[in-house]
Image (cartoon, rainbow, N blue to C red):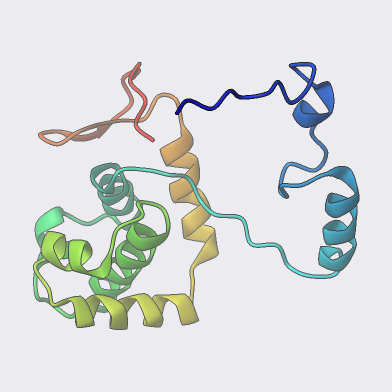
Length: 158
């Protein structure tokens, strides 16, 4: 038996397409209520959405490291800090799981969790901002064979 759908309204209603504060989803009254509650609280904005390869290239460039140094088993403090940052940002910005990160870095997922927690406790937001700007740059291009270049890229990488 086929059911007939009844026309619910008069079609396009502008009120459903109006925006207020775009950090929150809801009608105007809800947005005002949430904005008042959040007024004195720190609202955490997420970083850019990016592929792991582009993130890796940007972190290598910012820390002045090679991929071999970062992926190696060395324990130099600058290598470990870059690895911590890569794991944290890989999870937050590239939406990778600990298992995926462990596979890419050739480490156990429990090690990825430990590195994530260590970095989260002592985040380097200055370097994160530099990396985010580099990733958002319209001229930043990643070629796996050459690393980062400043040639124009017309493909979306996010």
